[in-house]
Amino acid sequence: MDNLFFEEKGEKLPEEVSLENAVQKAIFFFEKRDFANSLPYIVDAIEICEKFGIGIPNLYLMRAYAEFEIGEPEKALVSIDKEITNYPFNSRAFEIKEQIQFALEKKRLNNI
Image 1 (cartoon, rainbow, N blue to C red):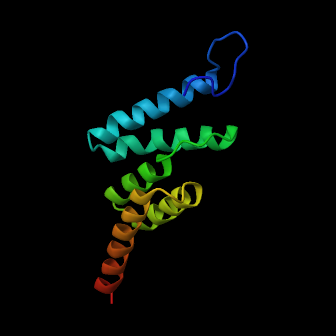
Image 2: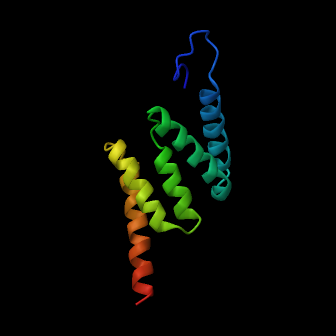
């Protein structure tokens, strides 16, 4: 993530530091499978990226996976669709989308 904001003095801008911190904390909790604590940092990182037009592959995938794991498959489907729209060659995103759709279909059938 070096030089994303291109500060002339060679110092990192606050937005770059915030993005790096959000991504690092998101990954820290994600790797511990603590998805509830990872999710706010993932959302922060995505918001910073959207604000500055930065693309970081797998952020929406991470959000989708975290949402799915905490029991929000509907939100996860929206998130994974954003990952696929932004990175259509991300085969892992399609795999996760299948898992989410399967879970949603199973949930729908159980509610009939």
